[in-house]
Image 1 (cartoon, rainbow, N blue to C red):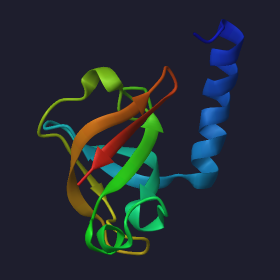
Image 2 (image 1 turned 45 degrees about the vertical axis):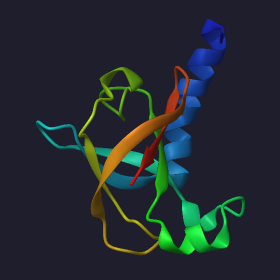
Image 3 (image 1 turned 30 degrees about the vertical axis):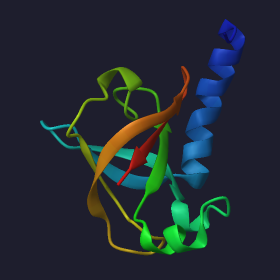
Amino acid sequence: MATAFETKWMTAGRAAFLAVFGQPVTFQPGTLDRAITAIIKYVTDDATVDPILRHRSPLVQIKVANDATLGIAASEFADNQTISVPPRPGATARTMQLARIVKANGIWVTYECH
């Protein structure tokens, strides 16, 4: 468990981290769409995944703020939620389904999308 100081430091650092590495995406929870910033990890960039799967799979992971305003809170995750994200670097964004939470803490949450 993080101390109050660690939580404040990580929260402040989150904004800077997203400003440098984040990309704009649109979260569609089923009601109003929400523009957020996400750090996108493409399966094609993951050397631990089999090369055949890397080039055939549109799988991406997004890391967002664990916050219902700035990102997608882990507590609001539900079935049939979608996000518009490019399936490959430089590609046009397309709608993908949030499949599962890969990991989460009080500051960040990582979702698998396909």
